[in-house]
Length: 239
Picture 1: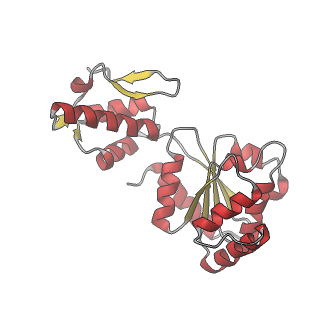
Picture 2: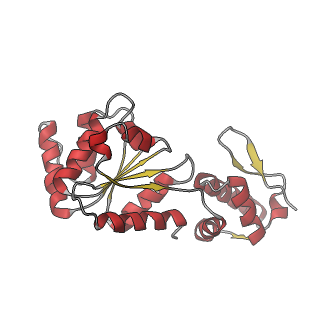
Picture 3: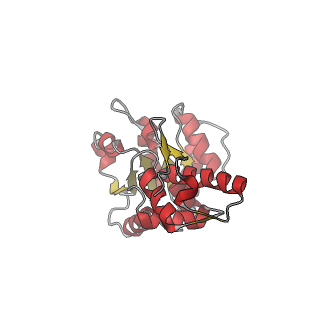
């Protein structure tokens, strides 16, 4: 299943592979919450042999390097510099791309030491690093000129369009959904992957409980298809 956002990632990768400056290997991926950035980039990493790491708020320099090394299958013994050297040595040989989700945790408005370490790894090895963050993440990075100059591309991910929702329902739903219901899911979810998947899961539960072979709007009228991020139910409105 390739959504419009998946194709944006592939296009960015092709462009950065042909970059002129070797050190310009950073790609910033930004997007609103709930549109499926994590699920998309993790699947993309798996399908392309990239290394997917999820940043953590509690990361120190050392724990960040240990998580990256573990993701690469490397030992974490020795000093932080020893671990970093293993990472750079490995990536210089394999040229695997790194994808760091929740990259907002790498920097803030005051300091960016962890982001600087990521930049160093990319500089030394020439490997691409994709940093996945929220909408304001590029603004934070731009505060640090020596890092911003390494950014080869900024990719703006968008909410799913109707074609994307149709493809997702076809790939994920274990019960047949009518076109009208899929359009309802697209409207109620507002193109947020997380909400689309929640709606599919809810519909499957109801279908199993009622032995429905195909589900239409009439079946779910008044039922909560998904819960939005303010905690309100979004119900199938029916016809």
